[in-house]
Length: 288
Image 1 (cartoon, rainbow, N blue to C red):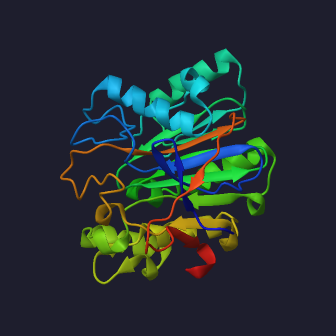
Image 2: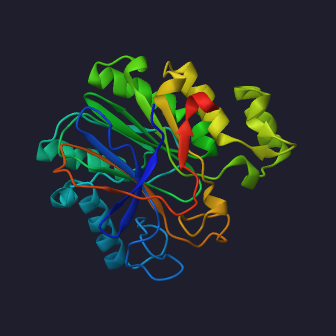
């Protein structure tokens, strides 16, 4: 499976796989290309971190436009993320169903499964793990911080997507976006021990550095998603604040980058982007 690649769409920089099948467009956004002022500069997509609401609205418009979904802004499903394991399902694109999904999401949820064309989904991040699952008939967008990872919310979303899209786990593709990596994520000894007990000792580096990627690899494998169908972003948000927001590295005051997906967008031409002398942003799970 190809790794995540960087693209430019207007002023917005994205991580995605332009070859994803099934009419799904998705992207993990970087922080450049928006209008927010410091400390939220510049493409902050989060509406609960203290940024100006008008700036957030413009940033979201730009991000949706990058996916060819600007005209669908009024149908955006954007949960109030609560570090739980609630999954919102969107099976119909009619106005009433979309309104109901938006209301359910704002009540508190950390994953959205969608099999309806014309309904964009956005979740926001600043160190937690964004995951997008895709298949021929739908997608899921998941917020997996340490609590969500421990509760295996990605597996729950995968089961819901398979049920709703009438797919099997081996037909899914999983994309794990930018998040805090083990070298930057020291946790308490108690939490490290809990993760080691749940996912195996390989999820703890050294004494107390937690590897959420390794825990998610276990979760996806146990859910039946083939290792070769998983792509990973290998950049740590806490070490890459020029490109991503990091709650930990920025002292708790920062914006949020996003994981955004839609079926049936209008489509846009993305320009591949590679910084001079840089390494690839991602690699296949089989390399793990």
